[in-house]
Every structure is written in structure tokens, then in C-alpha cells.
Length: 179
Image 1 (cartoon, rainbow, N blue to C red):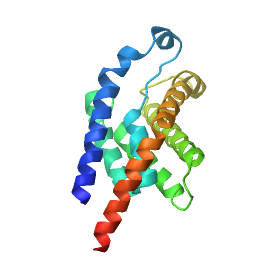
Image 2: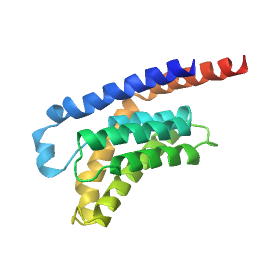
Image 3: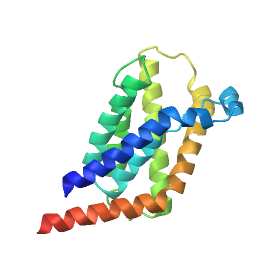
Image 4: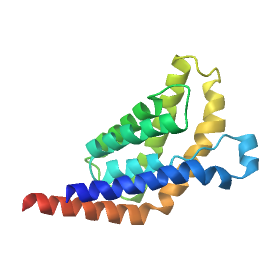
């Protein structure tokens, strides 16, 4: 049963990966691209939901895998940045929220912190290796916060189906482990 669950989650993440890289850039209004650099992270939001409602170790593996896939497919200056940032933020959110009863507000709060942590880690690594010279304040206002807003809107839109689906898959895995 565990392999079936992972197969469905992997398939969903891959579909979001394709949607994020092909369709969403066309749907983003041109006015937004002139004033802010909006880049939605649908895969990251789904991985954070996986971390919150199933297993942080599984989310870490998905974060590393799909982050590396994003490094190869979309972001060229440095391999491993997205992989490290996505895996670390997913694991940390799962670790920080593991004892908290997760309702909608806490879920969105955790996702907001996870996306913000992901963005800050990426910025810090690019700044450390001198791939960007943009000040943090400009990046925060023109890149991080607009992307965070879009990610939170997506997280809010898929909250109910994501939670029900992931909790059902987690319950099925626990039942099969008991047998």
C-alpha cells in the first residue's frame, strides 16, 4: 500500500511540476511581470502539505527529488539550490508542526513559513556564491512576497481536497501496517 500512495503523490507532484513550468507562465498577467517577479511554487506547496499531513521524511525525499528536477529543468546558475532549499523547508515545517493539531490556519501558517524559508535559503545561497547582487529588501518586496501571496492562494484553494486525500492515504498506510 505504501508504494501505491507514493506513486499517486509522485504523479500529482509531477503534474504540478509540468503545470508550474508550462502553463502558469502564460497565465501570469504581463503587468505583474513588469512590477514584480512572480513565480508560483505549486510543487513546494504540495510537498509542504505532504510534510504536514503524512510524513516529514517522505516530504524531504520529495523536496530533494523535485528540487533537483527543477534545478535541471528551469534554473541554470547552480545545481542543488532548489533541492536543498525545498528539502530543508519541507523537513523543518514537518518537524516544527508535528505536535500541533493542524487546522486550516496552522496549515496556511506552516506553508507560509515553508515558502518563505525556501525563498530565503535560495536568496542566501545565490548571494553567498555571488550569483545575485540584488539587496534583500528589493528581493523581499518584488520577488518573495508576491510569490508567497500566489502560493498561499493556491494552498487555500486546495486545502480541503489535499487534507482529505493525504489524511486518507496516511490512515490507509497505518491500517496496513497494523495488519
